[in-house]
Structure formats: C-alpha cells, structure tokens
Amino acid sequence: SVSEGLTRCEPGQAGGSTALLCLCSRSESRAVAPPGPGLCGPCQPDRCPLLRGCRAGLVPDSCGCCLECGNLEGQACDPGNRSVFYGLCGTGLRCQAGGGGEDEEEEECVCEEQEPVCGSDGRTYMNMCQLREAAFSTPELHTAGRGQACTASVKNGNKWMPVIKVPPHSQVNGTGSSLIFLCEVFAFPMALVEWTKEGRDVVLPGDDPHISSRGGPLKFELSSWLQIEGAERGDSGTYRCTARNNLGTVWASAVLGVLGAGETGV
Image 1 (spheres, rainbow, N blue to C red):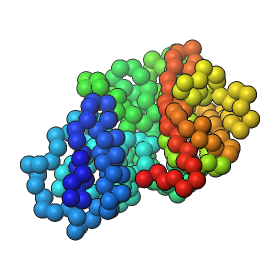
Image 2: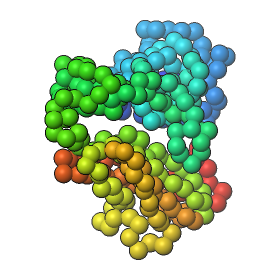
Image 3: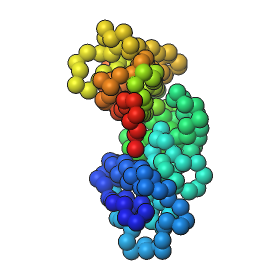
C-alpha cells in the first residue's frame, strides 16, 4: 500500500512474488512522487513488513529503513546503493548496463560469479546465482564443485537439459513500434527453441507477416529472438519462450503491452 508518499511492500508468497509486489508498489508511488529524503518520514522498523519468498535475499528499500526482496538475475535494477525505481540486485549480483536487449543502456542484474557450478544434487548450474536460487526451494542443496560441470554430466558426454540463461523481458511500446524479445538458452544436445503467445496454439511467427523469429547457436548456447514489426494493440499479451531437448523442457514468459495514441503506461 502507498500512504502519504511512502512506499510500502506487502509480503508476498514463496517463489519471488514479493519482489513483484514491491515493484508494483514502487511504480504506483512514483506516479504520485518519486521517493526521496523529504518523503520517507521517520523510520519505524516495527512497521516494516515481514517478507517471505525472497530468492535473492534482502536489500534496503528506497527510504533505507525497511528491507525488500532483492532483484533476481536478469531483472531490471537501479545502479548504486539506493533503491529508486526498479530496486537493488540481490546477493551475489551486480547492476550492469547492456543486458542484450534493444536498449543497450538498460541496467539489469548480472551474477558476479559466471563460472559453472556443480550442485550437490548432481546438476550443473550456469553460475552460483542460479544455484542459490535453486537452493531457496531445496535448502539442503550446496556447492559440490566450481568451474566445471558435475562429474556425472561429464560421464554422460556433457549432456544438460535446457537452462534459460537470459529470459525474455516484459515491455510496453506504442502502436507502430518495432520490438524484440530475446531468449538465451544453454543446453547440450542443442535445444529446440519455440515462441508462442498465450491463447494461441500456433508456434510463432506462423503466417503472421509482421512477426518473425531467428536464432544463432554458440557453444552449448542458442540465442533466439522474436521480432514484432509495426506493433498493434492486438499484439498485447503474454509471450513464451520454450526450449527442449531429449533431456527435458523449460520455458519463460514475458508480457507485452501495446499502447494506443495518447495512452501512457502510468
């Protein structure tokens, strides 16, 4: 809830939705006035919300009084050590510009330790942040080795089920604009990546002339783009990137909002 210019985040559910609720509250408060030293008022720690489900740990809120959920890998973030709009990155993450989207100057959370990590569950994780996130749901999970794939994976010929390294990001654009969704997948054997839109059974682009998709393989990785030219109101919706090989299937989704003339995202 937002009261007298204060940004308050209500506790969410396990799985990271607390961070989403905090982000929404922050966006709502920014429509009234940006948070600042003159708007925070006296710090009352006993009124701070009890947070649950913070997969990337806790970070200071915009007033520096309460704590809120840290942003996960790939999420937009505020640079520096003060939460202004998007929020601060969580444990083991740094806010870095140029995450590969259409706007190269947009900052997003990037894991500080990028080398592969072998988990005690026998799975190879792309980096330490992904293992920490998995350990949120499996507290007994810990690091079994760093800098290489798990021995079991090596014995199986370096085979990994798909992992979405960079998920598509939600965005808002005006009608007539061009936009791109990016989805980077790590897998071996190489994964098949498909794009779909919620409510439609066809794999995109299908026969729609203003939607196209392309991808480029690297070693163990596949970068797939879904491009929409001349966006229309009807393009609004949830888009899903699905990656599969013979070891498993994973997916990630993002929401697109297309605004008409004179509309704003506030």
